Figure 1 (cartoon, rainbow, N blue to C red):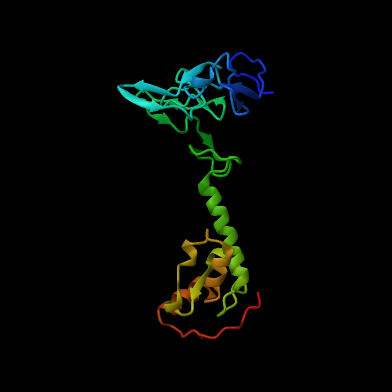
Figure 2 (figure 1 turned 90 degrees about the vertical axis):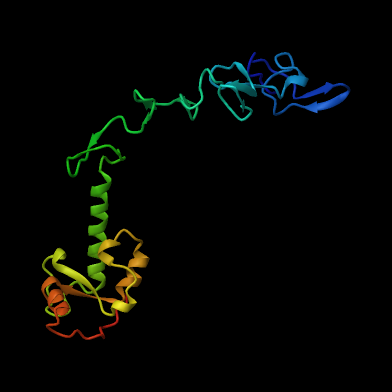
Length: 218
């Protein structure tokens, strides 16, 4: 049997009103607290349990509150004192503006004080650098792991990714390492791996690079 939200009493699901059978399974109040002809004119606040009207006038404007779960006393317009059934931690400054990040934290990687707190206490900048380094290492391994001219493979930062045909280039890999691996892999098939010295020499016109390279079965 349903329970009245106001008096906490059980009331039958089926009533006979004016000789007609009525199903009250969706009702929140019993007929004693809210008669049948007034059931659509009142809501029950889930926080304080008191009833409040479906329509109210604020600053000479009429507002429809039929979909509200909390009354204006518990949760006034624009304040959001209750969020998800619990009191919210939203705070406001002197001008009435909402403070999004009241508490700052120190990143465990770089040690800089940040505002956007994350679960692992690692700032988004450090997290992006970590993902870029992992994608760069994966891309270098995909292209053979060494310079195609001299075979240099000592330092990851010295190895550059070079597009064989600039006309087929869709995007710069060094600036888009946060993309999905499938997109990066498709672009890597148009590239070769060169060390920084030979990459600069090639663009300076010191030597000509062969357009054919071994097919990678990866």
